[in-house]
Image (cartoon, rainbow, N blue to C red; front, top):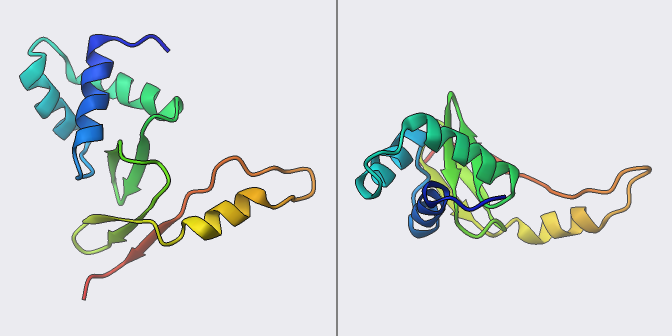
Length: 119
């Protein structure tokens, strides 16, 4: 995939943030660095980065958020607030699933999202 200035700025922002921003939030931050960038360009590049495995797309209710942090982690999503937290506690189980041999099927990627309510 060709690395454009816009794509690099989007990826750099997602790697630097610990939050899980929406496309509109990414647009707001990247537009400060590249005033000429459009929301459509941000959407297209986010989807290309997801397809290329450089970032994660997280569906939280009706919203889609993005995560550029280490891809070997899972998410805990509060159903009331939509807040997303990272966790690494399920990684061993995911690694075991990836190693299993199923009939005519080899797992390449496993995604686990845990939904719940903050107490």
